[in-house]
Amino acid sequence: MTVTATSVDESDRLRPQTAAAPWRAKLVRLVPAIAAILAGVLLYVSFPPRTLWWLALPAFAVLGRVLRGRGWKAALGLGYLFGLGFLLPLLVWTGVEVGSGPWLALVAVEAVFVALVGAGIAAVSRLPAWPLWAAAVWIAGEAVRARVPFRGFPWGKIAFGQADGVFLPLAAVGGTPVLGFGVVLCGFGLYEVVRLAGEGRRTGAVRRPAAAAALLSVAVPVAGAVAARPLVSDKAEDGTATVAVVQGNVPRSGLEFNAQRRAVLDYHARETLRLAERVKAGKVPRPDVVLWPENSSDIDPFTNADARMVIEEAAKAVGVPVSVGSVVERDGRLLNEQILWDPAKGPVQTYDKRQVQPFGEYLPLRSLLGAVNKNWTSMVRQDFSRGTEPGVFTVGDAKIGLATCYEAAFDWAVRDTVTDGAQMISVPSNNATFDRSEMTYQQLAMSRIRAVEHSRTVTVPVTSGVSAIIMPDGRITRRTGMFVADSLVQKVPLRSSETPATRLGILPEIALVLVAAGGLGWAIGAGARRRRAGDA
Image 1: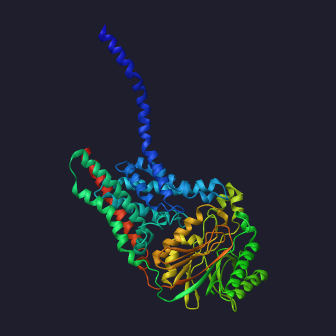
Image 2: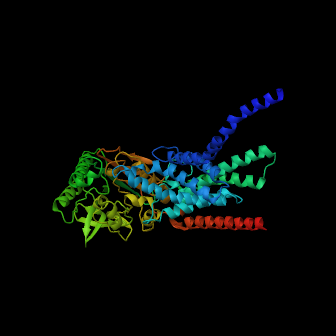
Image 3: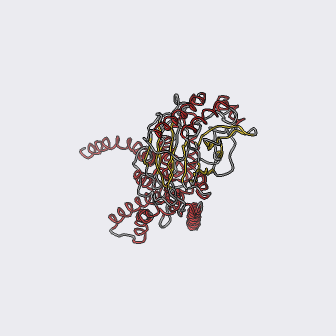
């Protein structure tokens, strides 16, 4: 009887554990998904306006842990969750004025690229020195995302979160692909070091080739950044120029901005007149050029006499050429144009924006979207046309390259101004429609990366903030607040030497894509051989 009673008691004690086991198993299965999301959020937190650039390393370490050894289906899902965790908060500004629908649609599409990258990383994670192949796969994904669909959307490149980081000099070596590759490689390498250390403690043996590869994955990007430091310089090579950046502000934020075009023009002219008074009073040096932001005159000064008169008055008051951001119509084409306005000669040079923004400056799939929601087509009534030539304004002895707003995210759109002779770069922008979101800080960080990438001063005149002057070493030396009228004046170095990144152009990106392709080919071939061996 005693034995029977004990058996019954034991059975009763075990029964609730057995019932709970499936729930624990389900929770355990959810851990990778939760980790993937949190790793994506961690990567987002590493981006501006925060200066927590180093969080990108644990983010990729966790991603490596989540994806290593997974099948392609699981890796797709986990990669998608990582993409959502990263991109949902990063791109929330895209829905500030148009609602959550376009924001969620954009993130849903962009996360597909991250999902495919996740599957690729899982495939190469079985190879020797897998962090190398995995980091190259990530950069290959960025390369694709920067080109398709609708000519690409590079926002969220890993490089753009590293303006304050130790890896920044790598931008001068090979541009955003090499900078991003170094960060991702180091993150995956950190996980591999930890994994092998744990394996060594359990088994009492260390696989020396694997350990050496893991340590190199961490050490080489850091050593490369230190070695590249001499490429970062703010020394004047071709003299200096005194530039003035004008932020006129807008009557109020939001899409209503476009309905207040004359007010915005008047604001920028008024701030330029104040600048002229400060120059006359000796409070600031006389600039060689005044830079206004994109859309500072949405009234076409070539066809509107009032707008022309306002701009001419401002240029004559300050006594130097003014670069004006305008919207003009020429030969039936709508153009986002920068106009260099000489105080004596009037408009003397122009640059037409080449990388226009889909769904903002032109509407892809217009007929389809119109059938779904006519409000979308009414917001972009006429598509902007693209310019065809790089923009370089010559002002005295200075050559100023132009990359208008959205163009700063695209490697080629900034580089070809430098190869066309630019000694400094200006990124006139309009962020009035994004209110006080993080967008302006994310874009400012891009300009800091471009400064180091090409070793050029970069000015960022913005309608409503944050405007800034950035030295060739990436330091911000002057900046405005948000939604204030202000002007910045500074003597900046002019430079003509080219960094390796400028000279090499797209070649480092092509090399990394080829490395990724080689790793994927190796992984697919090895998998096929394993399956054949198993069948045999």
